[in-house]
Image 1: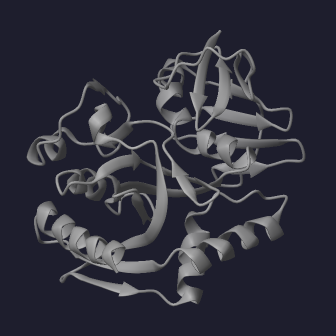
Image 2: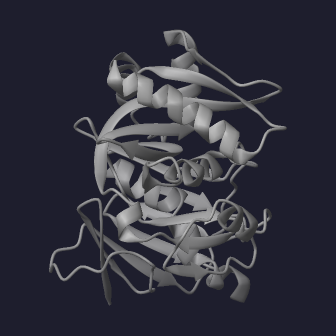
Image 3: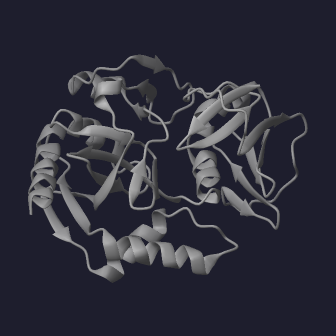
Length: 286
């Protein structure tokens, strides 16, 4: 059995994962492969909430079941599905395991400067990861990709892996210590493990940025009602506790300012990251 630690939460796992190894004896979660495949109707959704389980269906048809008992069952249809377990677990399944463990989890990337974190939030494909790696060249440290994991006014690093294209990594001259190929990624990205000096284990959230494609560069502070809607759309919600979800989102927008980031989609990545960097540096100086 493999043992891992993520944000202080311990996992025993029957499969190998590219995560921090742990030697602790106690496990908060146990990951188990199952031989059968469940008959479930997801109703064209990727997440299904039931009384004692959360079911997550991935793009390669793996199904992760997070049980109330903190067992995580993995069901695979074929070899392609099995080959993608490790990369798919690092996304939504891990996010819900951490959410179940008391963390606030938002779909986004985050970087930090002077121990203050900027969280770049939004749906897949808006450029969160590319903006994050671009900001490394502006003196920022990488915290997390895909999962903004927050607790007690701190944001934690689940892992030092980031998905991006070889071209972006080369164009931005980003160094890394390991690369793993993702065979089935629709955007032809791979997984890159950044070096320790490029990363930060935790930081204090200072701002949320929501990228929007535009023909100009501009950053505008969001009204609280807009911030609530945008955070809600990217928030890992526990279906059986809506009041707790709403309270966590309200607490976030009361304590951390949110901004629309209109980026010039025609401009090079460096121009947009320099613009965002300048705004965040002014924010932490204020």
